[in-house]
Structures are given as C-alpha cells and as structure tokens.
Amino acid sequence: LRQLHRVMPFYDRSIDIVIATHPDKDHIGGLPDVFKRFEVGTYIESSVEDDGGIYHSLQESVKYEGSRHIVVNSPLSFVVDGVRFDILFPDRVATEIEKNTASLVMQVTYGHHSFLLTGDIPKSIERYLVAKYGTKLQSDVLKVGHHGSKTSSDALFVQTVAPTYAVISAGDSNWYGHPHAEVIDTLDSFHINISETKKGTILFLSDGASLTKRQD
Image 1 (cartoon, one colour):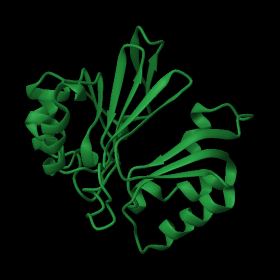
Image 2: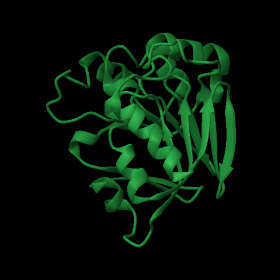
Image 3: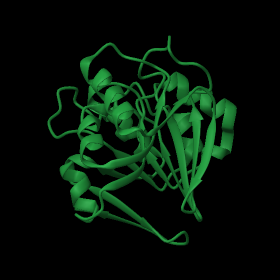
Image 4: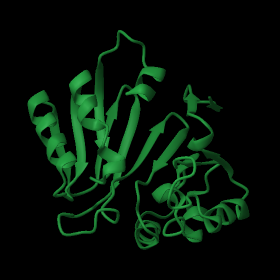
C-alpha cells in the first residue's frame, strides 16, 4: 500500500485490474489489503491454488469486492485504455503444476514499447516460451524471473527477449542471495541495462513513442 500511494494520487481509490502471477506469499501477501482500500474492477490469476491462509483471504476479498474474476487456463489478450495485455502462460489448466512453474507470464504493450513480466517461472518454462512464441517475446523491458534466482534467466530466453532494460525485484540483503551472480553475468553478456528494486522504486514512463526510466 505504501508503494501504491507513492505513485497514485490520494483521491484515486480505484484500480482497473489486479493480476496475481501465482499464490506465493511474497507475491500476494499485500493484495487482501489492496482490495480493502481500493475498488478493484477485475482480478486475474493463474489456476494454480494454495492451501495457505493468505490465498484464502485473498479469494474471500475478491468475492466480497465483487470484482470480475478471471482464472487463466489458456492464452488471453485484452486492451485497457490503449494498453495491450497478452497473457502468454499458463496455456493449460495449472491446478496440478508447481506454483512457480505455473506463474502468469504477461507481455504489456503500449505504442512501440513492450514489457515482459515473468513471475517466478523457471528455465524450463522460459525455453518452452521461446519454442512457442519465438521473437514475439522481444520486449524493451524484462522483469527478470524469480527475483534474479539462477533457476531462471536462461541465456537463450534472455537473448530472444533482447531487452534494453532488465528489472530485478529483490529485497536488500534477502535470505536467498538474489540476484545470483550467474544471472547478472548472463544479462551483462548481452549488454542489458540492469536495475534492482533494492536500490529504489523503478518507474518507466512512455508516451508510446519514447521510453525513459526513473529510479527513486
């Protein structure tokens, strides 16, 4: 909520779409409070489920809010205010798939610029996406998989996406040592501009023709 209030005006109490990549606590832990504080039009999630209390609290929050609830079992595309969203994965029912593996993968496109958001997908899914989509994956900005863990960021995948910017979402001094050196080396080998959230909030500004990055 603190981060939302930094980028949204205080009088704006509505959010068009909330998208949960997968039900791990570090990805959905703040969402029940978002539904309490904001009017949410649509909630989108993978079909993978969880037994944890936060997951069930979130499901109850979505139901209480009355948001449109979409569970992704196949590729999905939609446009909101000129911004195109292409959910590329999962492309099947994911109820029996491991949570990270079943993460939503989404490409967001506005004008000439695209962002590829990858949740916590492992290298096996990255390679699957390359085989299925090829150069369609090319994006200006890549949200690096699994917080910069060495379980993600396959070299062929990174090469295919060919981003100008790579963003690593990981806490400062996190227990897992993210981002791992192997991932930084892979990104550096393709001369990609790397930004890490541990150094501050990262904002990308686009008018559809030009793209700038700001870190606060």
